[in-house]
Amino acid sequence: MSKSTGVLQWNAAAASVPAELAKLFGRRLRYLRSLSGMTQVELSNKSAIGRAHLSRLERGRLLPRMDTVLRLAKAFGRNPADLVPSDAGVTANGGTANSRIHE
Image (spheres, helix red, strand yellow):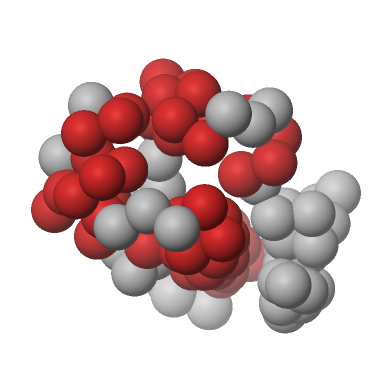
């Protein structure tokens, strides 16, 4: 199968969706942490998530698992939905709209 097939092009495009979401989530996490006045170490202690893992999340290097989102929400005293950027820009077909977080 050649690289010019629709299937491989779709897979390549789909790979950018998680990367964009990870960046948006990271920006949102950093914003909420700074808004709460916590350092990464304080948030790490409060959420039982390693500081290095929090750093990777904030830098958009990885997407969190659901249990991580729940622990972060509890540490912030917020609803888990508050950690998900409201303008993540994911369209119904899986693409992104290249939107940014409005702080």
